Length: 203
Image (spheres, rainbow, N blue to C red):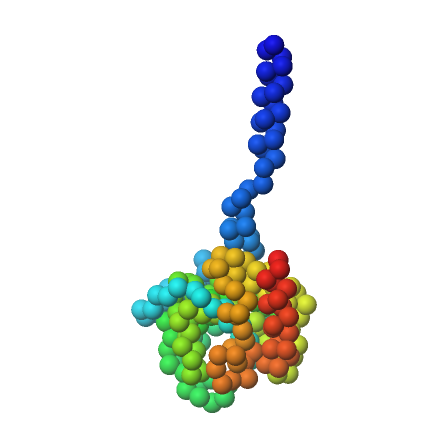
């Protein structure tokens, strides 16, 4: 009798272990991301506005890709530029921003770095309010260049992860030019964005 009861107990235990994790779908997908500490970020130089993510917006840096430079070096240079007054590529003056304007940066190798804390609104030099927008930027000038395959693969993974984390639907994701009058993220990326969003929504 004891043997029969033990066998029954083992069957129930194995069945319970085989049950799917019902919370797995709610967990953000794991990505390899270079943290702010990892690239040596300085703290913000001014107060920032808190917000809740409801959109995801895709940008390009509008500068040519530099495959020879490390991701950490690119992030440090971007932060230095961001936190000081300067001049944009179109000749327009830029004020000092508190921090890197984007929440995530993707270099030409498809490596991802953490930029501004996503709990705070990013910065923009165009006429739209980025409150609620998670700002993702890809290295490159996609009016002249094309995004690399590693970049596109990484963008799809990042989108899938952040859509799950913030419960953002495909309709709430777009290129910068979908929200403001700008060429960003360049014609060679913009034409791919909506297909990538659709794919990411299925991941």
